Length: 84
Image (cartoon, rainbow, N blue to C red; front, top):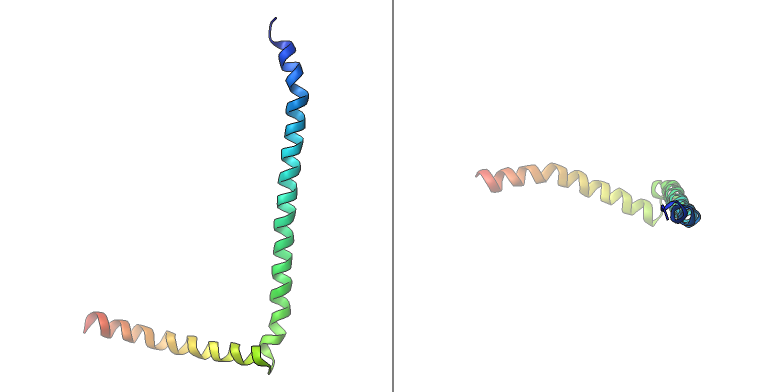
């Protein structure tokens, strides 16, 4: 035996395994793409609610104020704490 019959026997198995692996990769890529679309849809639907006068709009407004105050006060506090 020269080994060529063994390679011929393995070729269909390897081809089947390769196709199964490629199908698995395609499914995972499609699932990842679908998750991205779902995330963007959720983000786009949240924007009008965040700009409105409801509870979410007020929460966004106050969080913006907090972040602005933090951005103004944190550097001053760090200089005071570390240098003085």
